[in-house]
Length: 160
Ligand code: PNS
Image (cartoon, helix red, strand yellow):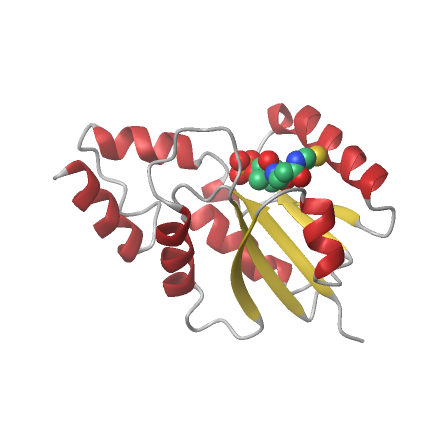
């Protein structure tokens, strides 16, 4: 069996929480595609190619994990890649409503696609890209929360 899981997101920037989830995906699938969405309606800090490059550094030593970006619907991208599972992280109850809506919409669009929610490691449940961006912007220490390559990219971006 060659089960392919997709782990989609904005990853702006990737955090240690994302990294933890990528490792956990490998318990569920033979191959994991980390998929950076191109068309999310947000003002990004890093371009999609920058985020892909950071993720590639992060997964450098993880076999069976590849990084891609995608445009359009996740449900279509999953079909193109023959993926049977979408993985999303659930950090807290507050995440659940939106995540459930997305899972049900994706199932409506692609009935062969199951969504699985994974809990991150306890010590990473409070970590989000939004908070990492904000802390880094004001010169706070994010070294425990991101890969060193991401720390350097943030320092470059914010000139600290
Ligand atoms: O990290 P995020 O921003 O929470 O990830 C959200 C993401 C990228 C997974 C979601 O916005 C998405 O799947 N976008 C692709 C377009 C799409 O399929 N939209 C309908 C989702 S039901």
